[in-house]
Length: 290
Image 1 (cartoon, one colour):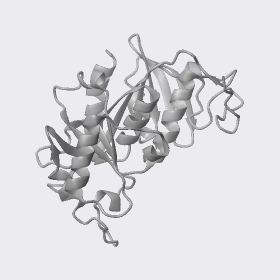
Image 2: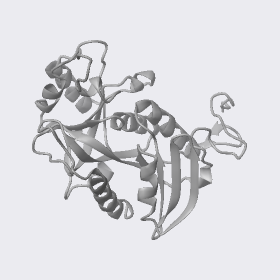
Image 3: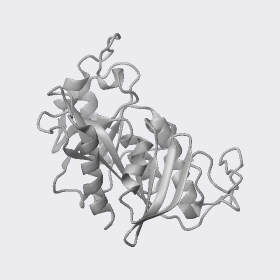
């Protein structure tokens, strides 16, 4: 079996993978990801006990228990590039032997649930409500660096999306489906739809400050899109990368977001902190039973 070189998998002096600074024993089988490092403590304060606290750069990790359920919550920072780091290193912690630097013969599947903030792209999805991404549709280029292949159903949605939006420039969208086995637990009190992942916050999400847009009808095209029973519900900056890499690596992934802005109604949450706290409480009540 091939040995993974020190330049490819960086392990620090305490035996932890480099960026997230975790050892294999410090990671639970169920992982909650958040963008904001400060949100880690807002989640772990609901744990009954915390056994691990680590921080390196923007990657803050707490591992602990709710009842008998062991959970890890980790911050990723913003964007698909950071998701590339976190997803690969979480997988390495479970599926690579750090002593021999070889892939383990028996691979483990993590449950990875993102709890984030997002903007709604439908008028009937109000601020402070919760959205689960049935699919992640990526406008970034991350998955194009991997041998990713969408299934037939995903390819049909993508084909319809490209025809409808007529995106210009070098944008090559991709799509991946969230975990159906986890999704079925997030039904009551949650909107479902396609979550679009953008590689930026301003132009890539149709915002205009001083710069014009290459695709000025972006938001309207997203909100008017449908493919069979599927429509675009929201957009943010991480979901498609989590779903795509999760699919390639064999992990079960789901993205759950609280809506802090409705881009169609031009509204923003009056109390975003409370909205996030409400999502955390509701999501933890479900995740702790998975």
